[in-house]
Image (tube, rainbow, N blue to C red; front, side):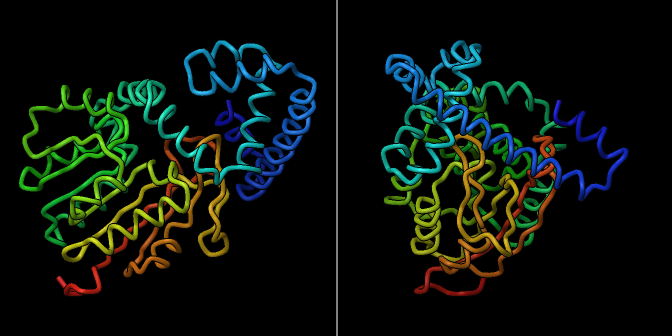
Length: 316
């Protein structure tokens, strides 16, 4: 629906004006929903609110959202959730365990597996990223590659088939997803799936030559992302490379230096700034219009950088 409206407007209005209108309307509607939802939240029974919160990440949420009052209440809860307490470590754990680390995460990844299981479709969406990985692997003599947040495994399996001489490792916090991937891609001898957090993994393993995140960096809180980048740099036995291919919404890398929530459980991060803050160098980025999200304010950021442990050689 959004894509059709935007396409119709572009026929009569300049692109910049269309984006400005869409942004203004989105902000206005968001505030209206927040105000109306806030009023309903105050007058709703504790039983109704408890039911919504307890089913926030369950399959029952879809049934609850069929009632318009519940939709407004959930919208209000999600917005207040980020406006007031988004940095809470308790909520971070809920996101990990109940959403991406639970059954809801498995269902999400399975849904997108069916969407992108054909390699032509996968390449069409991730062409810019896949071409960049090809460039890094071939020019930088990459021998080991890790994907943080492998999800349904399609992307890393696609790369694994093209570089049989490279050892690939796929990490995810969802054990059910990892087991499903082992069943599907068990014939790929140079690909290993591991159920573990980045913090735990880097406590006993060294980083790969190249680490990448696709649509996973947005799920990290800023402090978590900084910690992961510090582990990559400080625990690297030699030069390491990193690549991000992440969606950002209404975000300017030259002006916005604080991460902003986008949606219910994800963030727009200033990846170049965070990389520089930790000590990465040769930071490069390009922005592409999203091929998945029709929202004209959403762009895909392709960011690459390199770093080395200060006790190691700087050049390779």
